[in-house]
Image (cartoon, rainbow, N blue to C red; front, side, top):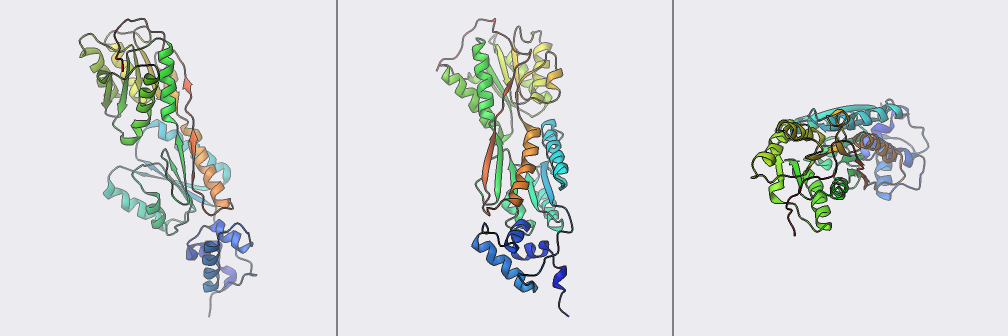
Length: 348
């Protein structure tokens, strides 16, 4: 006896045709917005399942589900992304699951393969080393909507959301220059390509002012409080009396160590050295003194990622790639002030 076609669901047709559930729904409802190739796949799947176009398809048996793949870390900045995404998923009635992966490739693949056994309608990805097309393949659907965070990719069915970190650090550097700081230092974490845009912002602002970043005032360090402490200490102890009047820091997390080093070595913030962070994390307002920082809109990014998933699942267009760029405004607090020290600076 053949299968009762009245019990066939949208999910079954989507799985067989290799398109999203929303695309199946539009084909059944004779929407003109579906591409010819997708419509052909859906109608072929319906034919193979024995479903006639005029028959009513059984509605969804579960809420739309979204999986968010995040790095396995205690970084509070990433926690804010997760919180924003979870809140928006709850508001929209999505089933929401977070999968955390570490940086080791041999542990990532089995974890990602697990997704092939979980019903999923869309994926949000933060780890930079993961290829969205590989994840979609493991989920068994090439056209499943994917949103990637903090990188730009031009891939079908992938929408990128990034933040303008270069512009944010450019504005922070300009602010210090307006306070008459010329010996400006920058401390960055070893985070690969993610650390480059803020550095470009610092260099561009100095260049526009007729200056350049002194190589003695650039430090790369471990992405930890201790890393920030050691990097700042090297500025203040090992440069034969030459020291920066202001330090720009890759993250508020590193800035904790930087401020500790400055104060431990007998300098006052901001009277002797101004400090600027990046993130605007929850503790930056409560540091001593409160930290001037570039606001990185993590929570808004998480909310926007889920909103974008919702749009992609209901949007009329099949090709949904694109990108959104969020600005990073400067939050001025008491860790910065006018430069009071005289010293040489590096001309171009």
